[in-house]
Image (tube, rainbow, N blue to C red; front, top):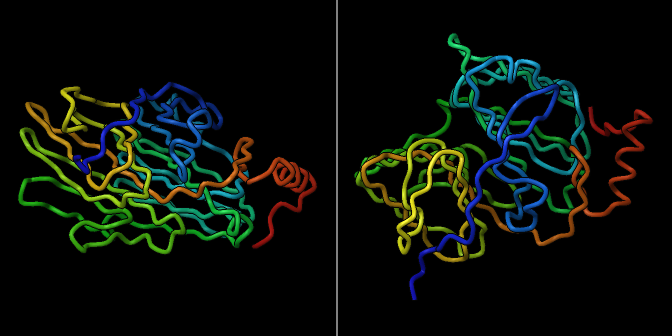
Length: 285
């Protein structure tokens, strides 16, 4: 029996709107829990028209999760309630552990041609860390290793590792791996995965076969969730492909989710919103 992971399901991202009117594509979200445990949501906010993103994501709360913003094109101005403020640009990542609660805003700005591109991933926190102190990491592109394999495969490592080269984001409870992978045409990429991790790929350019036992090719804005196994194998033919490869250790905990708050019980959700309206939501400043 092969130890290569087969595709469990494929999803096409769905157009939706968030923030103050940002048009984006949702690769997966609320209705896909628990298949992607410990991940909750992946949004694709690539756009060529400022009217679809310029109103951004004004001040809003989060509790109980980690938000990961990875930018391809343009810039995101950000600010939060614990004093962090800055701009992330092409290839940069913002990894924010919201813990007990944080208020923040993210305002996209396109490049000189009006192009904006990036992704936001939500990672669930284990119950023991839901009310931990918020933590903020901003990692510039130059701080993330770029690995070139002999096959011509190029990989940017945000967290996790390739051939003993590790990314800058560490000490995350669910032990995630987040890679930006490019495979040239007529090439193969084999990558080992921990058997207990949930693994998915999200295509952002080109097309490829993501299952060695299938002839199906998947392309832009398609997501592939893998079954259990020890390795993945991805093959290209006449086209190169670029995709995000993400994995993490499932928490297997109950989830109560309302808007930007993700806890373990409905009672905790109620408390969070009561505190938000009373002005006692923020525990650490």
